[in-house]
Image 1 (spheres, helix red, strand yellow):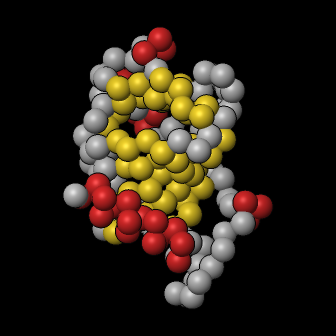
Image 2 (tube, rainbow, N blue to C red):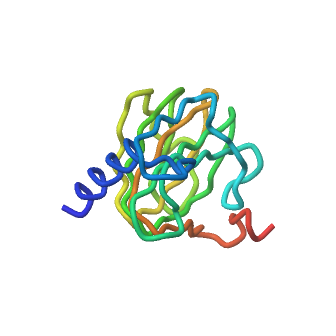
Amino acid sequence: MRLIAAILIAALCVASTPAAAQDTGPRALLPDSMRWAQIPTLLPGGEVTVLAGRMSEAGPYAFRVRFPPGFRVMPHTHPDDRVYTVISGTWFIGIGEQFDSTGVTGYPAGTVYLLPAGTPHYHLARDGASTAQVNAVGPTATDYVRQEDDPRKR
């Protein structure tokens, strides 16, 4: 039930309040206006654009993440349920506390993937660049299974 509520709230958030909005009126965030940036929880090469909300605060948020070919995100967890929508490429995700490039499953553009809070998982951009949108209810965090895999510790 909590996951369904998160999906509905996140969908409403994306539809009505992009992070770039200065007021509460309806807005459209066009692809050319999205500002992509590196974030501390990803190694260089991975980029994020925040679409709506604030990930560090209570409430719905949405962002897109894109990975270049060969990019890896080592096993980690998040405290919130997440809804991934594959925007482009093939989104590879593996479940577990050990990275295994043969243990990932690829999902094509258009796929919606539900990831419960606390699930250890990892990513690999195996076949080329990929982009996914994440919708959830914060606050959120990224906790790496192994501290040495955390880009913030390097």
